[in-house]
Length: 249
Ligand code: NAP
Image (tube, rainbow, N blue to C red; front, side, top):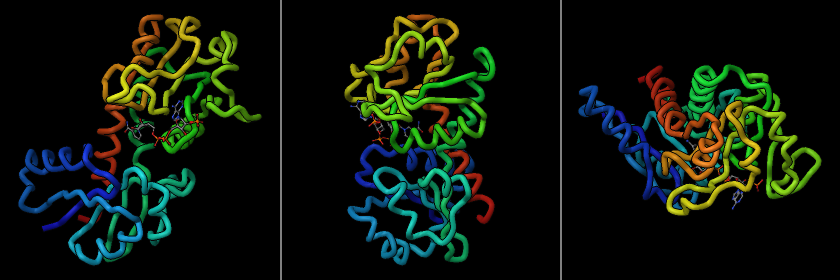
């Protein structure tokens, strides 16, 4: 039996175990592969967990360990190194290599979204400056899409929500929400941008997938903007992890 798993804390609402368990059943490989959750109260427990499960060949990493896990790895994929966050680990003959498949999932989903709604973006706003924002920024840079961060904190490099004007929204055709505002259960929350300045030229992408249509997306849609949620990103990161693990298993 070859084992895969997820580390994070807590893991009560994890998507990955259900996704991979269903996948192994559908492919008829459930006697060969299994996927388990490993809630770790401290990342210092990671080496012990690895030693207890020598059959582990791949690990997904979720909140709060995407950055904290890096010192425990032997090698980093260039994208994971550039972003400073790992959500997938491949274990090959005891060697741990870290990858970031969130950016693969986001990149594929974003390019599909833009291709179906107006083509390449000439400029974007990224709402939020946390872990998800760093991955989004990496994808935008790779695609040559100029962008500005919008943050609760004002600085030279980023706008604050109160600074946002009609002129800023007129200059961009893509807005990516990477804040947790609107995520279940606080579904009534939304980023404070001037929605009345949006129009059919705008594309709104929300990395949140639960609920499927956040208030951010609802408000954009009401102005005629094209919208996309984070579900394809979620599936894309899982499939990209599977592609990486399959190289050795
Ligand atoms: P995070 O680091 O905790 O927060 C992201 C940023 O949002 C923060 O850095 C902050 O930026 C802003 N923010 C936080 N609370 C806010 C508030 N009350 N009002 C306004 N801004 C606020 O979270 P994350 O790890 O980046 O994840 C963000 C979201 O992405 C979550 O909803 C997560 O579920 C989702 N996600 C989805 C996928 C997927 O596959 N679809 C993958 C990864 C993450 P400022 O301090 O600069 O304002």
